[in-house]
Length: 482
Image 1 (cartoon, rainbow, N blue to C red):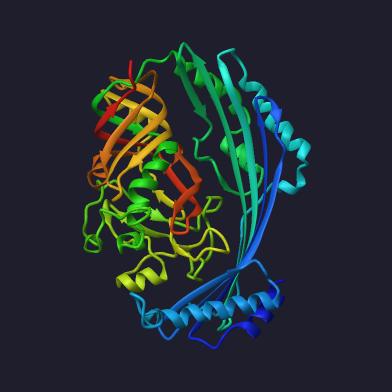
Image 2: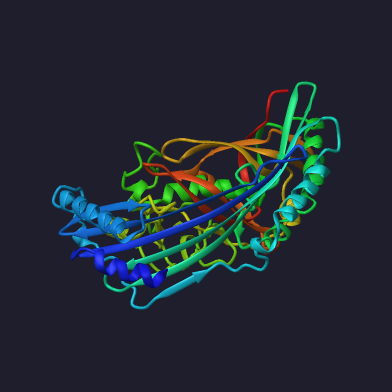
């Protein structure tokens, strides 16, 4: 297919300053069991091509699911027409952009140990049924379920000057949740969070790597413990956020504010703007000196790993925040040219029928030196929080309020009992300066989410976040109603 597409593209590509062809095919299978009942498996296949043209300062693109030569020729002509129409009329002259050059063919493939195709549907449902059955341990368990879905993605990117990137991705998304109800109170405990935090690249080995086997029982036990637990205390105190909450904290108060197109104003009428401005880079103290944040699309198994972004830029690990200082934005080739500053390889599209925009990929906090026990021992009065359940943040990605599924009080350096409805609030511009301890590799987890939304028309994309547990000092904590 690669040779065929390359040959067709050479015949249909117009004579312009730049032209690219991006083919994407995704095959997805989802299996689920709800309250011990197997639901019908779902399989979908989606494929198509996006053709992009830059010519005489204009920029145009067109997508098609008709991947015949005539269909691609029509799409190429339509993209060229849009480039002609925008030339001299846009807010940016695209002739000033040097698109990435690919001198030789490149390839990337996810590492898979246990292929989903080697496991029968019967075996898949038996795995889910086992965890579902373990969850119903009490009459107060009123809802429970387990699922996983796998996606295999083929992507081919070709430029008219002879460049080519072929990438194949395998994704696995396990999920499990249990809801308990008693005396008017309902509490839900989930495996990895309601945003499917244990998603990674790979095959069915991810179930073992994430701890899915056996999670049905432990999740049910924790849901029942929440029913009996008091509400989280309120006040200014120290907080330890575990990786499945750090994931959301990184995503909302570092990832989105640092997206360069958002800083340039592209998203303000839909997903919002950013409190970050261009003049902050290079000197702004975003967090305490313990804060080191990397953009790393090269980490094996992480959900948004790749070798090249969707504009053909080579993916490399880059510090976006180092020793607390803001270093570089999350901006791809086009945004970098507009802003006049270096960014990262993060021009990404959710599918063949969307144009690439600036997106997070793997955005990680580098491990520190503290153990979890040391962090707990350092706190006289505080709360340890796990697993995001709710989030709210303003249009500039600054003021926020987050809630978690489960907490444990910390008193005099000792981890105490469970508390329910733990919440905290803060301001992104100052919150990260309260970072007091960063966990070591032993308390780091590789997580992510399939559900990052942005752009018009909307694009829901895969993002990875690896982080250790972290301690924050003097945080505004509050619980639910008593």
